[in-house]
Image 1 (cartoon, rainbow, N blue to C red):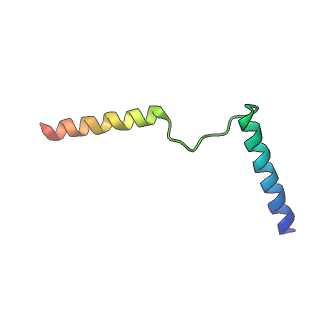
Image 2 (cartoon, rainbow, N blue to C red):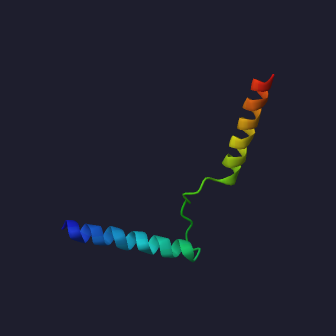
Length: 53
């Protein structure tokens, strides 16, 4: 029973990854979005400028 469940979950994940690769669906990426990265850089710069004053 558990073996069948694991096989079904693995199959569903592989189908989702293949569909994402071909653009059928869009899975969320694990990378940090560039917008958040730029925001964090800006916050870091403002903190440093406040410390300098």
